[in-house]
Image (cartoon, rainbow, N blue to C red; front, side):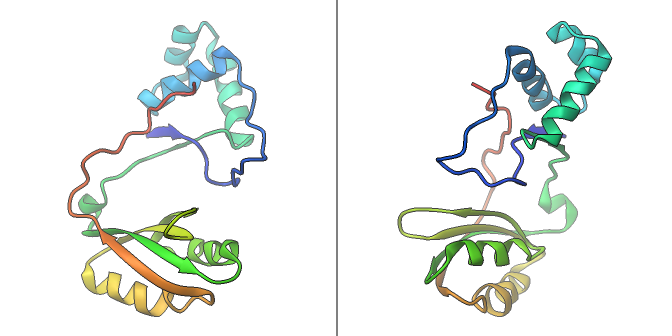
Length: 165
């Protein structure tokens, strides 16, 4: 498991980041290194009791600052095709992003600036599933003008321990 920023609340340039003290940041960093680390172990590292760490972790997760999740290897679970799909959209990009977010195969959606309006990462069992996802689900969303698919050949790096700054 790893602690990562939550995706349950959208971030925007106008939104203010949570003000975290040094201890909360240290707790997050401990969980980013090892999401299975015990509260007692974290407490020793940051100078708090186990109960105080538990309480802080609960507040951080309830506030949407972080979530503790299991990160899996899709190939080990039978998902042999991953891809990033760039979408050009007409109209409301947030409506398209919300519709993409409802598709189980889509695990990551962001609004972007530049060549694409929206990027969506997908995890599929195989190429046939990817083709069906593109043709029947994604390209069928109202407002999608075009897509460009970037098929992953090999995952080279994926880390969630970028810290808290």
